[in-house]
Length: 190
Image (cartoon, rainbow, N blue to C red):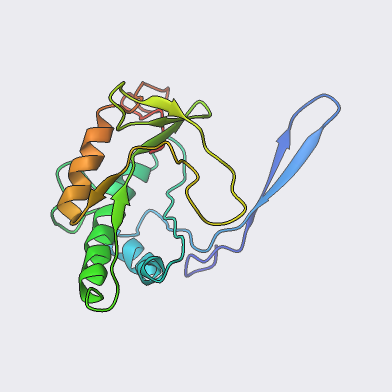
């Protein structure tokens, strides 16, 4: 990364042994944040993307790193901080801005916001809102933007508070287990 945290890419060499030998994989990033980054600073870097969502584009905020590196803290903040505070996570800040934009544009555009809560664990996708406590669902590959998980349960929401209620319902069904790095690590990505 440069002094501003902008990263152009990363090359990783993986020794797969056998006939394949060393395989090189390239990754590019729009932005990387160091240990001194604040929740507000991280969100300010990606907040403009919410206008893109309301304009019909797909957007993904992703936190990536090893166990214990702060992914959950960055995205959700500390437990109980969905309603405010300087450590509030990216998810909750984005929800406030999203619903503010929906309300602001309400005279000219009708939006319907729906939430599904899915987990990818051991290369399987599970619906965490299902009555069975997270039944497996199929992810469909589509050539265009659209519904890639048509069997997922979706709840229509009208406020950040509605989203938090649905997300907490799904949280109860997440796969959690200890790792060598973190005794309370989630074993899934939802």
